Each structure stands twice: as C-alpha cells, then as structure tokens.
Image 1 (cartoon, helix red, strand yellow):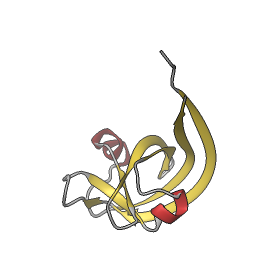
Image 2 (cartoon, rainbow, N blue to C red):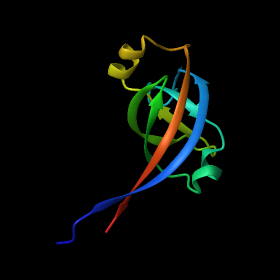
Image 3 (cartoon, rainbow, N blue to C red):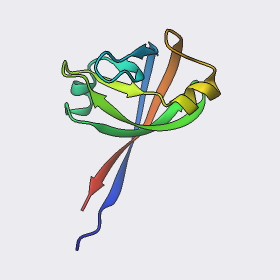
Image 4 (tube, one colour):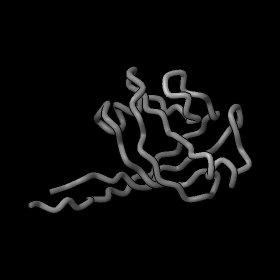
Length: 100
C-alpha cells in the first residue's frame, strides 16, 4: 500500500472580491478570475492563506469558465463578521499537492 504525502508550493497571490452565493452549490465564496491560467488547471486546487488577516485553508472549486470559487466556511465568516455582499481581501500563500 502506497502512502500519500503532500508537497507545498509557496505562492503569493492577492485576491480582492465580494462574498457571493454560488448559484450551483449555494455556498458563499469569492470568485477568483483567471485562476485556471494562474494554476494551470481547471481542477480543484488546495490552498492555505489569509482572509482579512485570519488564516484559512480551502479547496478552490472550478466554476467551469476558467475561474475558481474560493469557499469561505461559516465559522470563518463569523470570525470575520462578514457575510454575502461584503468585500474581503484574500492572500493565497501555499498550494498543496498530493504526491505519492
């Protein structure tokens, strides 16, 4: 049985945006424009970073148009005192990839 490990790539990508409700999933998230080009994939991308100064981790979800949605969990939004329609500043700091 092979073990799966993780490879972390340092990145520094700023994203400014408004919290929106994804029409497909209903999740609250921020759309990241041109992320398919930035990450070289239209597949999910695991990241860590900061939202308005608070650390977070998430899996960026492809939206089908070359962009990704950055989901913001309810607990994080509560800490931030932010909700749908509010603007946030996100800084993506690490991309996490599974390796064998």
